[in-house]
Image 1 (cartoon, rainbow, N blue to C red):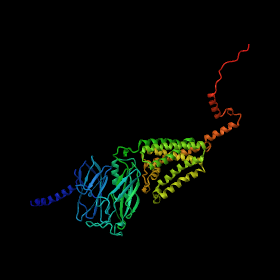
Image 2 (cartoon, rainbow, N blue to C red):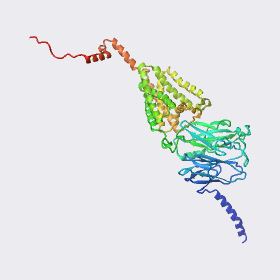
Image 3 (cartoon, rainbow, N blue to C red):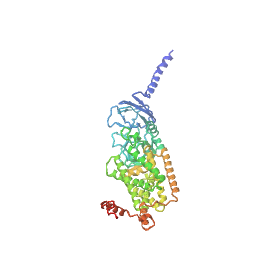
Length: 566
């Protein structure tokens, strides 16, 4: 009889303690509970503030980083409910770092939606110990005292990331080591920074795909396993890296700071970009590509398909197309560098300039019949493609080619080699150029409707010619399923076009004769061949002179004027 009351006395507090611990780990509409080392989906209502909590933090955790990622809407993360510039951050990839006190077992911070609509994203919690370096621990440029965030900005040419220097790790509850007292191995100057890049699936702008892949590369181990390391920076290097912008292609950038002495590492908050705007009315991420660009490259693709299979047979048409490409490329660079015209205006002027160049090349061949000039122009176009393809490979990202004084002489040397080869085999070289350049024009036409990395074979060179700062950018682009398919299409078009034209032209003269020279030869033949009826026909000049004289000569009246003889 006495055991039951005693049993109830001890059981009730125990059940209450379990209930309180379970309740602390249950999320509510205004409260989110996170677990260490895990990610979870986050939904924020319009203008709503949500409390985020981590209960029961182990004693061996020294600091914790929190990451919040959304596709394109900005969210606010804050240490306090009342927002201040020094304790909050707003962005689509925002994070906070929490140094823990000695006896601290729980952690609280706040999330807010400043947008006019609800926000969905993913939150990631990463715990670190005292041997791990502290990302952004030596921040002197940005608002947060300790800032583990990566700051990204982009334009048409390049995407730039910047971040604050890290500090070495320290024990829980201790004062952080000074950042700039000394430069020995006992300070932050021994730290190294690895910059990683991870491409999202091509032609996929869905939010769910972004969230899945952000969770896939949020931690150090996951990014090392799945991402591509592009560069390693020392602590003495500037904490800024530039990449080539790839509009419409999702890409995640991450910085991992390493401590070589303790063999430990920590991750900054990864940042993502599509190098385009989801909310703009013109050329947003869903409607990339202007109508003018699609029209221009569609016509170019049709002409390229014709040149690929019939270029050498219809030589004047080929010369017009090649002259168009040669002059249009140079003209676009010129007017872009010296003027600030609208893109559509520049594209229209480029088309006019290219047409004039094509007509000029045809007239040069018609008048002078110089095969050498034609071979040089066509060879330079093929050489440009070959050289661009060479630097599209990882060779282009070698540090030696980041200097323009090295890149451009090397690039131009490869371009010039091809016309030199053409001098020995002019017909074969011309047909090869028709197949390769014509096939690539088809690829560019496809790219105006469906994104493909193959367009960056020449686009990276164009960007470098237009922007003096582009040489510092990494030009790595994704090479995924659609790119393998289009590479195969390009190869099939080029090979079939070259083989077909070589077979069809095997019994024909190497190049068709110049119409003007043929006309001159025919005129000389008529002058010396008296059996030719055309020999007795007066020259054009004589016929015109006779017509003019007839206009002013008095006509004799018709009829008989003499008397009839009887």
